[in-house]
Each structure stands twice: as structure tokens, then as C-alpha cells.
Image (cartoon, rainbow, N blue to C red; front, side):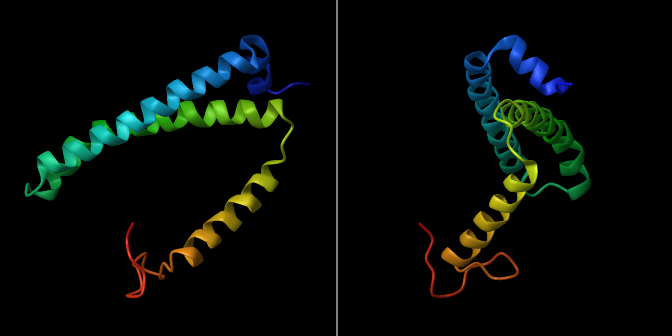
Length: 116
């Protein structure tokens, strides 16, 4: 029996969902940008006030991430891709990035690396 995600992409079609993914990716980008702008605006205010004010912006990011996850799930089902394979590939890419940019355990740069 086809998954719910497969049923959705089969109904709308791959081309339409590719366009939808571009749209949702841009909406996520905008939500993150709005969050960053609000952080700058709230700089110097007490943490409790900042947390309250930022919650709406965080939830907007959550909503846009969910939209993107749903579409990614549709592509995974459409192309019959094993989720374990994606997790494995993702782990390799994370390790490669940590090594390539010499990122230490705390997320900082070693003195020998420079920011681009």
C-alpha cells in the first residue's frame, strides 16, 4: 500500500512538487532571515523578554521546516530511497565538513583555519 506521502506526490505530480519545494525552501529562508533580524532588534534586552518575543519567529521556522520535511519525504518515497542510506550519507557529509574546515568539539575553528 502506498504511503500517504507517495499518494500526495502522485496526485500533484513530481514537477509540481519540485516547484512547491523551491517555494517552501524560500519561505524557510525568509523565516530564518526574519528570526535573525528580530534577534538584532532585541539585542541587549533581558533574556526573558527576548525568549518571549522570539517564540513566534521560532514557530514560523518550525512550520517551514515541516513543510520542507513533508516534501522531502515525498521525494524519498517517489524515488524509493532508503532512509538509512540518507542518514549514512548525511553522517559522512557531517564528518567531511568537520574535517575539511577543522572544526573542533566546541564548534570553533582551530587557529590555523580562516573564515571565508
